[in-house]
Image (cartoon, rainbow, N blue to C red; front, side):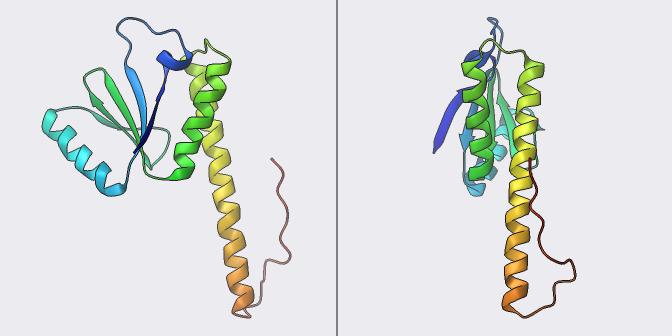
Length: 137
């Protein structure tokens, strides 16, 4: 398991009552087990910046659970970038993570499109969409 501290305690200005935010990389099975335990303990489960990220709360401990390496890397990169610019407001942090997530989704879509085009070429399927266009971001 991989995990690291994020949130106001890493890059913001935490208050004594601030949550402890921990990003945790889990297998889907471990996430399911943890979610069941969280339900039994009465903690909250909410979406967090994307479908594959789940925030499970145990009191003031907020586990940001990710099950894919790209999502984990988005959180790691964002946390390191924000830590270097510390202190950072919650609004700026949210904007940073949403931008990084959008970039990761675009990169995944580009890889999926390239794989589909390669498969179509291997199967000798005509490509009605023409030549691929390079997108710049």
